[in-house]
Figure 1 (cartoon, rainbow, N blue to C red):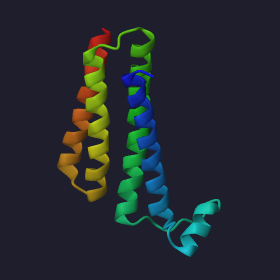
Figure 2: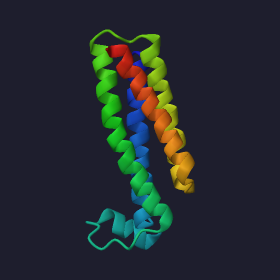
Figure 3: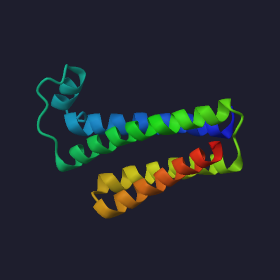
Length: 131
């Protein structure tokens, strides 16, 4: 597997972890009542705590951004355009997303947006290498 495709797999795992963290925080899955709620249909979820709300929003944003990243990375791979610029863009994107999740969970608003923008720069690096 190429380094670029490895980053796609890593990003898929990070996205899955963010979704699981959000789900566990929302249902309080570490408690007996939370486990029961998490294993059910989740029809009557309690209102989210501030942390659970941030984790949910961060997970949704991660899914949205992963779609763009995966498409660009797979196109680069299929086009045989796995240049150092593409790989660097993918690495910037991945690490920015990891930091983004931590910052979002911590509730740091302005820095969160700056880190998100760095991830977008990583995507732009991939796009610029494909054009």
